[in-house]
Structures are given as C-alpha cells and as structure tokens.
Length: 231
Image (tube, rainbow, N blue to C red; front, side, top):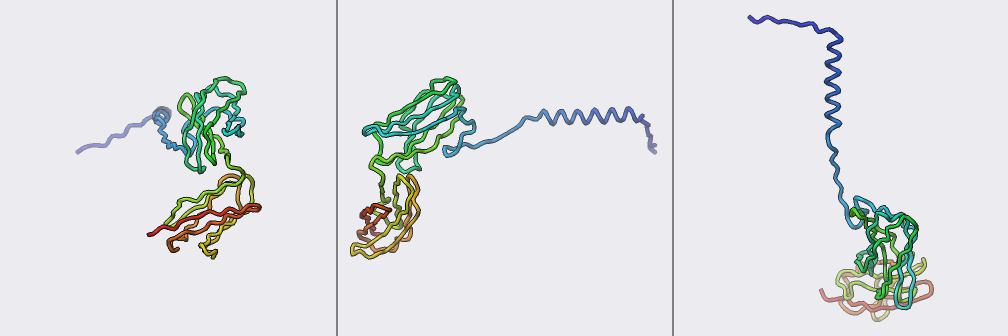
C-alpha cells in the first residue's frame, strides 16, 4: 500500500517560486514577434505613405498645352513624381515623371503636357525611396471651353451615360427625344465643377434607331445624336 506524504514549504519560498514563474511567462509573451498584414491598392494610400508635404498643385493653359505646377516642402525622402492623366476622371495613365530635387526647403516643380485631351483630369503620384506613395488632389482642365459633353457608349443597347464638363456649378437638364421631337426620357441634376455623369439605364426597351440627346444648362443648349442598336 502506498502512503501519502506531504511536505511543508515555507510561505516565503512558495511566494518566490510563484513570482519567478509569472515573470518568466510575462517575458515569453512580450518576446513574441508582432505580425501585421496590409493590402495596398492604387485607389488608396500605400502602406508606407509619401513623406512629402505638397503645398500647392495647379494647372494653367499655355497655348495648346497644359502646364502643371506644384510646390513641395521636405522632399528628402521623395524619389520622383509621376504625372497621371485621365479623360473621364476614373481611369488614370502615367504621362511623365519628374525627379525630386531632394531638398528640405520649399521647391517648385513643373511639367508640360504638350498633347492634352479635350477634357483632362490630372493628379500627381508622389513616390518615396522606400516605395511608399500617395496621390495629390485631382484637377480638371477643359481644352474645349467651359462646356463639353460626350455620350458613351454610342451606339447603345441597354443603357448609356452623358458626361458633361462644367466650369461652374449649375443645373443640368437632359432630354432624350425621338426624331419627331417626342420626349422619351428625362434626367436632371445640380451639376458640379468638373465632370458630371448622368446614366440612362432605362432605355433598353426603345426601338432601334436614331435619337436626339438635348443637354440644357443655364445659358447653353447642346444637341447630340445617339443610336439605339439592334438586339
């Protein structure tokens, strides 16, 4: 038969043993490496943001070209600037780049777009030495004047959109007429500066043929033909 034995441990020694175990566990927990994950896309700031301080970004027309000018401060970590342009304000493409001057003072930069689109949206992509980047604001420049509009797609099947560029906020009314002048569809909105998009997604049932899109703003009326294709 086995006998049970009990050993008395002084309270001071027992406290020391317990305290040593707790400290060991705390050290092991602290020593665990931190694991972080990050997903960066071109529509957001990158994981490592650019350290540049963009003080000003503007554009101006120069003959048939567009001159982009920007001012930066504290650009020692910036490797270069990519100049991006879009025709619709959504899809941007690189059209050039400028190396950073790598100085810690206020610095001016410029880029000349010698072949601008009828309607242009510009932004800067600021790229660091370590790969971090960020985007500037978007600036719209209209080479055709203060009012410009396009219809996409044309011809259409189920829907189309009217893109209208405005230099100042104002109401926009769009009428879809058949060739006899009968009103088929109507849209209106309060336009903002830059590109305005109005979608006609209820035109799939219209008969194939030619229609007229009438775009009305406060002081201008523009009419464009649009074609409804065969299904």
